[in-house]
Amino acid sequence: MNDAYGRRLHYLRVSVTDRCNLRCRYCMPESGVVSFSHEDILSYDEIVRVVRILANLGVDRVRLTGGEPLVRKGVQYLAADIKAIPNIRFLGLTTNGVYLPEMASKLAAAGVDGVNISIDTLDRKRYEEITRRDALPQALDGLSAALKAPFSSVKVNCVLFPRSLPEDWLSVISLAKKYPVDVRLIEWMPMTGESIEDAVTADEAFEIIEKVYGVLQPARQNVGAGPARYWQASDFKGRIGIIQAMSHNFCNECNRLRLTATGDLKLCLFYDIGIALKPMLRGGASDEQLAEAILEAIKHKPRQHAGKPMVLEEGGICSVIEPTSGMHKIGG
Ligand code: SAM
Ligand code: SF4
Image (cartoon, rainbow, N blue to C red):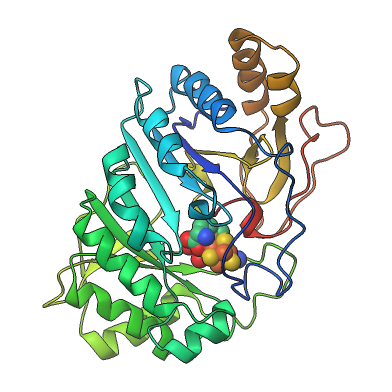
């Protein structure tokens, strides 16, 4: 399945819920969000149907995300059903890790290949300040559970959000020294119109990392999956990944589609364009009709974004989806 610019779209991120057990300051308001009701969000059967149709069109990698995917009950059953779809070669899950101690082995048994765990500091007080919850011990137990599960890949995501401190992300990077995990620093994205000025760029972080951990050598890169570029520090068991989400535009390599919890197939992180699949799923559309609508919609995937939320010019045929405000609704 190629878009109008010849990009092969084969990676789907599925947000299974907009709810979360944490309240990261750069992602969610303190009061949480007005959660969708049960009927508003796609059922597991509906998600599996959409993934099956997309797999027939060429999607071969799926990542479950949220909100926090592990707050939705029985997500391991969804994982097993998705992994059983022919053509799905990789199933990942992105989580804050807090519920991984009890879920990791169930997810591995269900066929989840890899988990990415989001941890922004190893300082318990700072973690509480950032996430508004005192849950660092649980998240770190989640990392240990993930390493034992076993998954074929365990990564840690750390966001360079505005006013994050070098101590925060340097401490998280030390996890790659101790464990065979890749730690990825992700440039913060201003999803809700905030100023980017206070955010650290990956280049600035890189310089500081080299001062602390020595010169980084280019490491083995993962082929075709995502925009992270990997580096190796001496004596480290895992790699250091850098995701220049803002300072380097990788739209020309974009291979992604996103399915929101309410059933919108979103074409670009920064644009509210895509196709609302829920009315079709619940209105009796056949698999062929859904596939046709999806193929028509992907012709409208924007060539690139400008690093801030954008609106589509008047009259775009697939500007019908809900505006998404904040990453918790899109899933990263
Ligand atoms: N709750 C799960 C978690 O935190 O991993 C999954 C959903 S979360 C929205 C997915 C990823 O997006 C996390 O790694 C999170 O740190 C990252 N994220 C959230 N808001 C972001 C932003 N404004 N810019 C960059 N990354 C962001
Ligand atoms: Fe929740 Fe993940 Fe957003 Fe933090 S980043 S509030 S854990 S959805």
